Length: 138
Image 1 (spheres, helix red, strand yellow):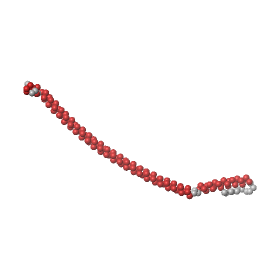
Image 2 (cartoon, one colour; image 1 turned 30 degrees about the vertical axis):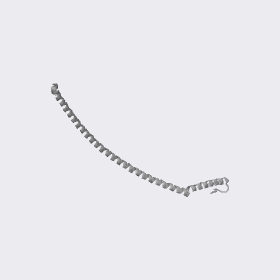
Image 3 (tube, one colour; image 1 turned 120 degrees about the horizontal axis):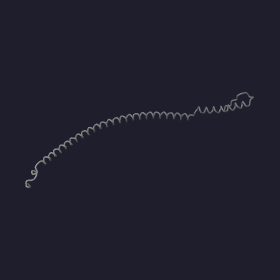
Image 4 (cartoon, helix red, strand yellow; image 1 turned 45 degrees about the vertical axis):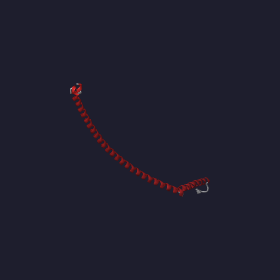
């Protein structure tokens, strides 16, 4: 403990103040010394935590890079899928057009056959009735 005496021996109150001042300063200085000189365990713990922080920072950088690469792959895959979809739409459109032409041909052939049958019916209606009847009924 540091005791500091200030002043001359004649003043009792001044000496008392000096003694209190020295007492307080001594306590503060000893506490300050303890704070400024951390023990080995605290220093080791701080170094360990510092290394952990650095490791985590490296890990975060790696994860960010992996995420960036994954996003790029996903974007490329999405573009590929969009291209495939466009090709499929083109193929389907071609198939639909072909089916439309096929059905138009079928419809045209059906209409032509209907016209032929109607013409035949009209021709049959114009024939005399007797030509249609069997001979023994006439």
